[in-house]
Image (cartoon, rainbow, N blue to C red; front, top):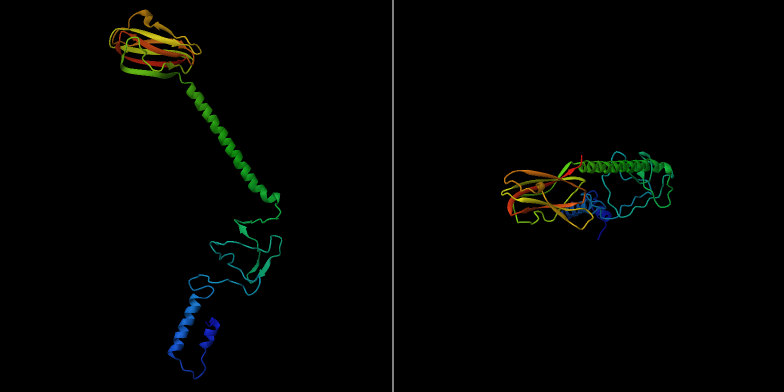
Length: 256
């Protein structure tokens, strides 16, 4: 198959040569070959190695006319930052590779403290800032938890319109005091009945049970409130006799 140069030479006519139809076909094929099968075709695709005819004389792009991105497998560079600048038609330029204004380091390159100082300072400052924020958030969490702990009242349990079997505990499991202070029991009953409070002190195994309202029956359809001193971890419950439909709420109040 003739080379491109041979095809072009075959198209050269001398004075008096006749232009034939075959000559036109050869011209069209040659132009098509130049357009589509050159080292770089008209659409920009590369079909073979691009080799400069002079060593280190040509550049790929200039300072204000740059390629947007380069995708490649390997890169081999001759010069480092200490090498002399290379002279070209547009002036002098370095042959080093840079990313975001910083030269790429290769194996064996020296690392200078001055080059690392600013980035290192920024990283250290950032780490300190994060530490301050973390400590501050931890302090906020501690403060919030302390504020929550200062709540003066907490509902431990409630039963509304509950049919309480005779002498059976209303709450299952027992209600545990969250803070040192008082237990306030609020009760109303559909029928006149006796109310009992069971108390299991924290750390003990023996439960104590006794009547509320000084042993007097609770009047029906009336509100009754009773205070009982407790420590954190104490457990309490409520019973009734005889069976009655009751509403019972048990609160834990911080000691004033």
